[in-house]
Image (cartoon, rainbow, N blue to C red; front, side):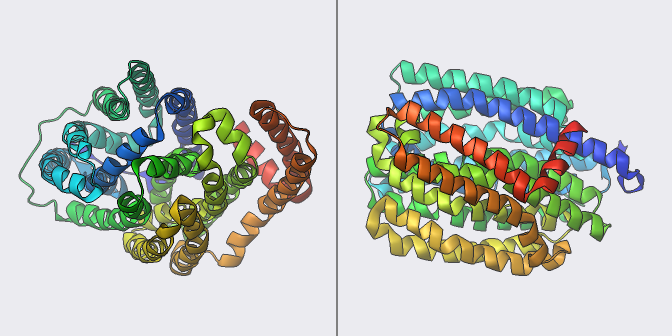
Length: 488
């Protein structure tokens, strides 16, 4: 079976329609799936303790490190190639199986070392059980690659929705049953195995694996570069937990990681599915430099239009939000949430660059950017950890703008645009979000003493109304572009 790509010869309308459908299904399903998971997650957070989340975060460092080697870079190589053969599909499946079995064994070996580092014996037991996750990964990554090549996110969306319901049900059931930290272990396992079964059926991707890897050098090299990029992403995204886990109690680490979860909801849950669609779309138009640059700037405009008011509002409403959503036992997270929310706009913009440079055949750009970020952020966290979770929050604020500056310098010439044009795309929503923030602060200062929930409701209502009005003043063109996009 040969899969021949004639995407480059398709009319722009055809690709635009495919991108719109992909965004609707991938992002729309992600929103629905996250609503289901968040409803369960916030209930679970209220039931479990910061200590449970701290223990789980310690295992998360090992999981994230090994999962970046799980073969999704190889799968991305299959998406990026203009043509693929049945033999290459079988080779990819064989690579994924061999790689993930190796990772499972590696995690079993690392488990006691990680427990010793964190001085928490239970971490070893948790990691041993979590090694079962790797068995499911090949049955997710291969179907993902095949469906993404066709920009068929509809079937992926249906599977993700079912998996989210299963995972959320498992989490809530485990918390109510008093399983403690094991609730946080079993819920992802339910998610992975449901996705593995569903994705394999959706993509009809159950093929016989080939362990004869001759001729697969190009695929392996692309996957290796992508894995290297992910390695540096791991260093920068997990350095704070790795460093903090050694110095903090599980309780304080749980406070920090839950604060991070709240502030990264948008960038970690909504932006990645958009980036998946963007990667496929950029790969289809990679030979048209002007179209690629225009698509990147549109992505920046639309995403920051939503991201900036979210983060500004999160920083201002941190106290009533935490007390309403998480409960009084999480009150220590309030100042950490406020600080982290101020850093997240820089992170959101940062993660938009990699899909464009990768799809343009320049994954090395992402590797170098990731290496720079790993050094800058790790150094900041090492200095700031002595001041606890609040210190790590300040480290994010100080380090991430510097990291973004290096990324812009390397990536913008490859994408074919300029810093001035990126700034022009961000300025209107930034102005509107700033007006919103000032208005909400003024209202907050004059509100009578209210319970957290009505206090939060008033501030959200004021912020939404002011931001909407400010957008018409500062970003009417962007609103019209977004409305037109949604209508189409």
